[in-house]
Amino acid sequence: MEAAADDLLAALSSPSSRAGLHSRFAAYLQPFSPHLPAANPNPTKPPPKRTTKQPKQQPPPPPDAAAVRPLAKRFLPFLCRALQLLPPLLRPNPSSVDADELLEIYALVLDCLEAISTCLAGKPYSVLLQRGRFVVCLESSGHYARAEVEAAATLDALRWALSPTPTAAKPSRGAASAAPLLPEPGVAGEAGADPEITTLAVELTVCLANCASKGKVKETAPYERVLLLVEQLRPWLRILTEDSSRKYLTLLVNALSRCAIFLAAESECFNANLVRDFCVATLGECEKAQMIERLPTVARKICSSVDLSWGGSTQLLHDVL
Image (tube, rainbow, N blue to C red; front, side, top):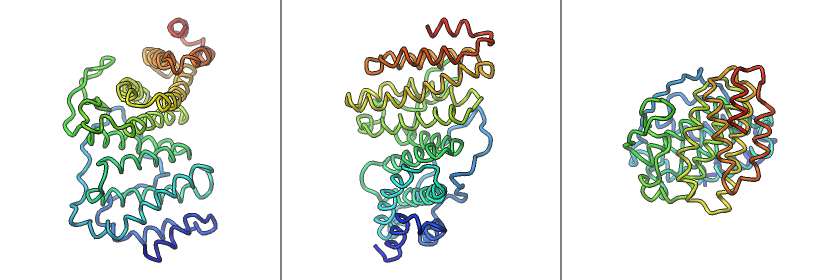
């Protein structure tokens, strides 16, 4: 690698050298500018207000391979090394003073990697796997609104990568027919047997659930989306080994439980059917053999959170019990 690249990577690993580091990264990666999104938002800046209906659009195609091959030859080792360093730096202190600077660098490096994705060997969704790690870092840093947007965009890109011409799904809970958020493994070719797809999908679902509950979101759309994802994750979870399945089911149940407890406590703000469906679905995941020991604890916490002054409280307690 070039000396400038080595200096940047050394500064990345040194807390005392991180002031203004994003600007230095941007200057070094300036040759990517024509191939980056026109407006690359600050990863810590909240997005515009969420709307209930968010049309799904096919992601724009990456730049032509011939145009970006010189960039790939020059910068790929640097980008890969930076992506190895960034998650561990954010993990111990996700809310440290350096976190926002590191997240900005992380977003820039990912955009540059995506720009040269047509030149990369290996799995065609490898950049999405990297974006999944970025989403986890955003959520753990407390940037819930931004993490939700990134998780939804990554999920949508994954859907297109697995099934470029998605078919309509059966309507759920009275909703209009729509493309599934996550295709069946059977239509995903070789990717349908890849455990990394399952772990990515679970992590994105967990992130979306945590962003809703930890962000105290009082809109129905995020919770409805999580319910759909839980249903569509089931065939993918069968791909995992028993140990991996238990690990990711635990993450999923923890995230769903937080949402269910929040919905039960704030039930006056939500449709009664949504609150009931979410609580029942959460307990349904607890009933699986690997999670059955969690069932009494989660059910008790949901019941103790129910607002008894809410008109639907008795029916909800009956359904939970």
